[in-house]
Length: 159
Image 1 (cartoon, rainbow, N blue to C red):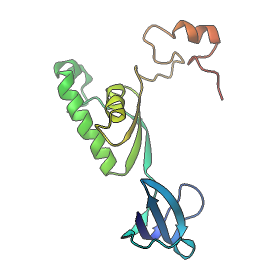
Image 2 (cartoon, one colour):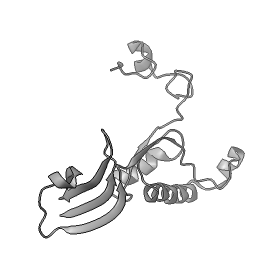
Image 3 (cartoon, rainbow, N blue to C red):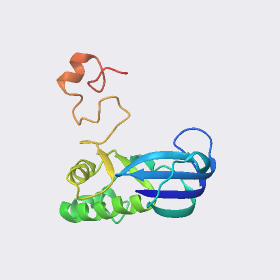
Image 4 (cartoon, rainbow, N blue to C red):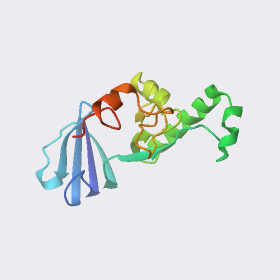
């Protein structure tokens, strides 16, 4: 069990809490709130810090593994090298406080598989093709037949 005591706790919802506590029990948060209402945690490892907040989502990322913004050079680097660079970039995002990434065009599908296998400890949701604003789901030749039959641009019913 771990107990994090913070001068400021910024919860996922509601107002910030001065003198806040987060209790982690068996890799799950069992309490987050004011220290005055926190349960006793005898034997817990105690960490003290200024601020605690939930991990942040990066809702639009590209893990291409390039060293330049010149996309014409993309095919010149081998995919395994770009994947290694992308894994490094994903770890850098985690260290910066990003705990989940929606990767919208790049190696995210493969990174998500590495995450699912436990190779990387971060959430990554990859798109198999780039996400586009053309309402065709990013499919290079238009939506698959399931999308067309459903009348939805993404093949799913909204809601």
